[in-house]
Image 1 (cartoon, rainbow, N blue to C red):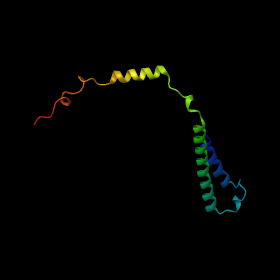
Image 2 (image 1 turned 180 degrees about the vertical axis):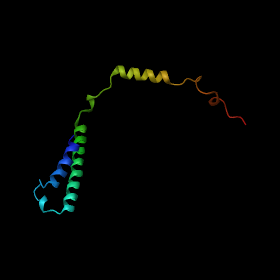
Image 3 (image 1 turned 90 degrees about the horizontal axis):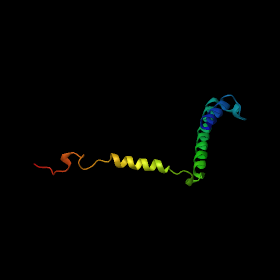
Image 4 (image 1 turned 45 degrees about the vertical axis):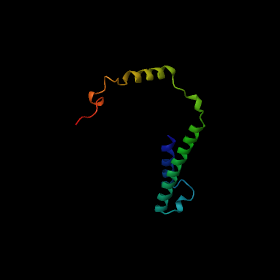
Length: 95
């Protein structure tokens, strides 16, 4: 949510002269600075998200044992047996 709110607030603030010094800028400079700061704010939010994800302990998330057992059983069940493989794959090519 912050990734949407921060850039919109920055652009709104520049367009409505809420930031100090933004009244002295030309319209081109206002557009340039508001866009640049909006992009930087999104990057700051992404960096904060990555930092908080890296700080989270990795041993916290372990898969459920029942889920793993069911997944392994379904893989073994769906693996093709040699009789299910097509007859052309067992023979050598004859000319």
